[in-house]
Each structure stands twice: as C-alpha cells, then as structure tokens.
Image (cartoon, rainbow, N blue to C red; front, side):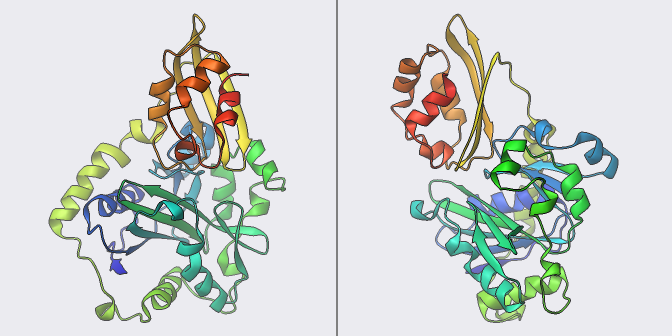
Length: 332
C-alpha cells in the first residue's frame, strides 16, 4: 500500500480528477490510498439524473458545488466535516460490489474510537442503525477503486435539505426521512477529535505509523498535476458531465431492486425503441451506454428486447439483477 497526498486540496472537481488520474495512470501492480476533504458539494452517482437528485434552490443559495463521479450508487453530500477515502488497487472481479475487504481498516479504526460501526445494506457503514458512510466502486479492465465517505462532523441540515432522495429509496431503508437515517461519527466517539485526527488514526491503522517519512508514498509531480487539471477542465468542471441532459422519452419504467433503482426512459417510435436511457443508483461495473446503443432500433416487445440483451451479462451493468428482471422492467 502506498499513500497519495492531495496537498490539502478541498476543490471537489480537482479531487475527483486526481482520483481518476491515479486510477488510470499510476502503477498498475500496487495498492494506493488517497484521502480528501471537499468543500460543500453534492457528489452525484455516475448513472443518476442530477436535476432529480438535488434541491436546486438550496444548492444555488448556499453555493454548493455539484459534481458527477465515475462510480455508481447514489448522491452524497460532502463538506469540510466529511473525510473521503479511496483504495485504488488492481482489479479483482470477485471484490467488485463487495465492501468488506476495503472497509476493514475503517471499521477497526472506528471501533477503537468507540464507534459501534458495522457494514449495513449494500454499501453503507452504520452506527446505531444510522448511516455514517456510503461506499461505491469503479473498475477498468486492470484497476479499480473503492471509495467512501465518513460523515464526521458534517452539516446534516445541508445533507437533508440539498438532497432529494426518491421516496422509494427512503422507504426501502425502513425510515421516514433522510435525516432520520444519517448521523455524524462525532456523536459516537469517546473523546472529541477532529477530521484531521481521524485521518491520522486511519493512516496508523493501515501503515502502522503516522510518520509520513516512514509511509510508502507515490509522488504526484507537477506534470501529473497538469494532467489532473486538464481532466478537471474537460470533465469534472464541465456542466455537461455534471448535469447531462434530460432525454426525450414517452415511456418511463422504474423499479427498485435490492441492487438499486433502475429508471428506464424510453422513446418509442413506430413500435421500436428510438432511444433508451438508464438512470438510477445501481452499481454496475460497465457503462450502460453500451446497453443503450444495443437496444436502439429494437422492436418494443419483450421477445425482441430479450434477444437483444441475450448477448450480454446484465449484471455487469446493473449489479445483482437478472436478465428476465431487466426485460420485464423495460417492457411491461
């Protein structure tokens, strides 16, 4: 494991660009650890419809930055009271959409601080039944990262007022509101500490020391930073990436599965799929744009859609959902 220092940057567009740059361009045979803290921001899941996930009036009034990440899952709120961690490793298919391996040192650190933390749901860390961390993953053919939030001392009013979770998601958690299912880690620790101290405790758990000179690291050179800034400019700082466009559709089919919500927006013309877009907080490994292209022009009936999808493993795109379930979602 090697540590990457983000130099205390709190710009979410730059931190997400750094994370992707390291994933794609740094040594492919080593595990890396990156921490970052972001200024107030909403980080949108790769497949979500941004406008439907945020309260635009609150976001604009409070100057909250909205950025789309490349991993799946749902929208999360970041601020200076939230610590983010990212484990960047060689890709192993058996570890994708599994979080026990990557959250083990996080749970150990939290337990040492007196926090009754445990894995819960498909990708959360809970304390006292409330969410203190959400996790997601992204993979290329050779590399992957598993990253997560640690709500330490965040403004939970901003969390609840800036996000607009869909009713089905909240109800699936068995609670009435997002506010009733989130908590700050600071509520549980035995002794008061800071976000910075939490980061140091995690470093000690993972590397056995807090001494930066004794921790193996990867240098991010000025040439690297130039590439990171370029990636930020063309992607994470680009409204087209962060917000996208609402697709033309005359059929909408939505269902929540254990793997997450899949929301299909379909434009049917002359009994064929002219265009289809998939939104949701599902956590697939591959880009659903491939499926969208595969289904364009297909007759809008269950047998035709089933045949079109028979050449792919839909779990690579949506997680733990069957072929038949996807077909039934698209065609009633």
